[in-house]
Amino acid sequence: MTYTTDVPRAEFAEITTEGGRAPRRRAPRRKTINTVIWFVVLLAFTAIVLYPLVWLLFSTFKPSSEFGQNPGLLPENPTIDNYVKVVEGIGGTPLWQFFANSLFIAVMAVIGTLISSALAAYAFARIKFRGVGVLFAAMIGTLLLPFHVIIIPQYILFNKLELVDTYWPLILPKFLATEAFFVFLIVQFIRNIPRDMDEAARIDGAGHLRIFFSIIVPLIKPALITSAIFTFIWTWNDFLGPLLYVNSPEKYPLPIALRLYNDATSTSDYGATVAVSFLALLPILIFFIVFQRFLVEGVATQGLKG
Image 1 (cartoon, rainbow, N blue to C red):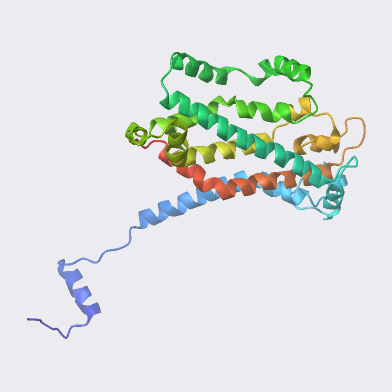
Image 2 (spheres, helix red, strand yellow; image 1 turned 135 degrees about the vertical axis):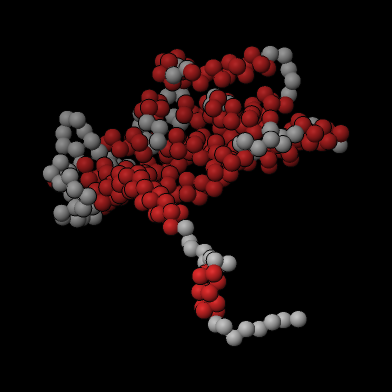
C-alpha cells in the first residue's frame, strides 16, 4: 500500500526541518577549506621544485651576453642560435655522436647491472652454500666504501689491461655485480617470494636456471625496473668515470662534452652550455616518465610478504 501527499518537496523539507524530525545535511566546510589549503601548499612546492627546470628551458633562448646581466626568467632578446651551435657540434664532433656515446654506455650498464645483480641476488637468497652470510655481509660492506678509495687501484688495473680510452672500464664492472645496492634490493624481493613455488618446480624437475628465469624473474620485475631506472640515470649523469678513462673527444659522453663549451683560459659559451644541458636532461625525463609506474609499483610491493 502506498501513500501520496500533495505537499511539495521544498515545503516538506522546511516542515521537517522546523519540526526537528529530519534536519537537512550541509556539506562540511572544514573539509573543503583543508583541501584548498593542501592544494595551495602542494602547488607552491611544485612551483619551487620545477622552477630550476623552467629557468633552464627559458635560458636556452638567451644569448651568452645576457648571462650575468639578466637574472630574470624570460630572455630580453630571445634567440635560437644556441640550438644551432649545439646541433652543429663542437671540436669536429656532431652532437648526435655525444648522445650516441652516452646512450650506448647507459644501455650496456643497465643490461649488465640487471643480469649480474639478479643472478647474484638469487644465489644469496635461494642457494645455500658455505660462507653465504659472510659474503653477503662483505657485499653490504662495500656500500660504505667511497668510490674515491678505489679510483687509483682500479685505474692501474685497467691501464695494465690496456683498456684506458675505451668504454670497457665503464661497462665491464656492471657485468660483475659490483652494484651492491641493487643486489641487496633484489635479494629483499626474492626473499618475499614463497619457497613453496621453488619446491614445486624442483619436484617437476626444474633446476636453478629454470626456476630463476621461469619463476623468480617474472615476480621481481618491479625490482628490475627500479634498478634499471636508477642505473640509467646514474650512468647518464656520470662525469668522473668517463673523465678518468675516456681521452678521445669523439668518444666523449654528454657530461664530458659539456666541458668543451667552457674553457677556463678563454671565453665560455654559456648559451650553448645551457642548451646542451637541457637536451641532455630530456632523455632522463622521458625514461623516468615512461617507467615511473613500475618504480611506484616496486616501492608499493616491497612491504608485501608472500
